[in-house]
Length: 108
Image 1 (cartoon, helix red, strand yellow):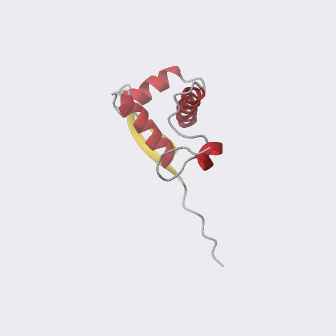
Image 2 (tube, rainbow, N blue to C red):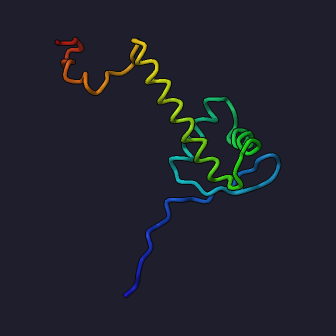
Image 3 (cartoon, rainbow, N blue to C red):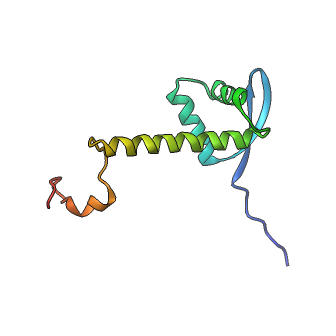
């Protein structure tokens, strides 16, 4: 009987930061998140990761990058919730879904 292992969701990627080549092991959603953060800041991915690398507090760069993407997503969520709570809501709250009709008007 042969045991088959599941393919790893973690992918090792090579990148040059601060002039030296290194590798990070990240799942695709974290890699996509890093690329989106870099693009939003009009930076290359290498420059963006280099800035994170300079400020990192733990020895593992891959872990630092995961925590960074998580912090960015959390900050975006919190900003959206704050905007919603101030009355200029961008999206209906789940409890209000039943108040909306298909024609875009609220019913009470």
